[in-house]
Length: 114
Length: 111
Image 1 (tube, rainbow over the protein chains, first blue to last red):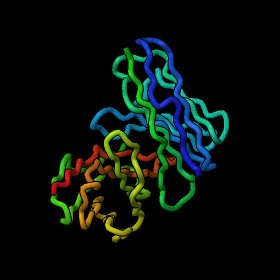
Image 2 (image 1 turned 135 degrees about the vertical axis):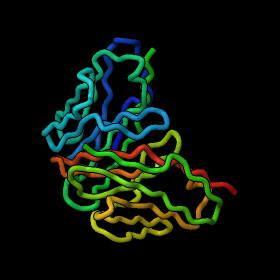
Image 3 (image 1 turned 90 degrees about the vertical axis):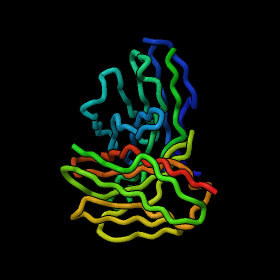
């Protein structure tokens, strides 16, 4: 089945220790998104790619970086995690054409910062 | 920028009908989406409105009025499994495929 996969599902890191979260998709979608979601809050868009074109949100901290080496994979790098970065990180895809604008979400990676 | 407003909580009984409203402000507008999210799960897509009017998908319907910057999600024949958070989301005409989510409405369905 076509899907969005995130690894790992749970990640524990120490304060200041870099961490990389990964996302892969078998949908062959053009657009990939990274969202941060804290408890009882909305998913907050960090950045998104249309193919290789990177779109950063103005309020995304420099501590967060992303890479998309090919259509299928996208990575979120947190260079120096702080306690405030503990959250669920959601990857999503979109076909990238006009239409329903449906986003397909992965199961998320829950990040704990000690 | 973009902003969306929706009620934080709604409670209804099983079998009832509930409407979740969403108002938005955006510098450009493509469409309004609705997502459902159960505790511990990922958001799942419910509906999308780009044009004024009502879209119906089974028990769920979504409405949009572009002139009023307003939409709603209508859930009929409520079931216990409908207890979840519901997010409206705007795709803005700011380039790319940027989508901004509202804060979410927590729906509690009681027996």
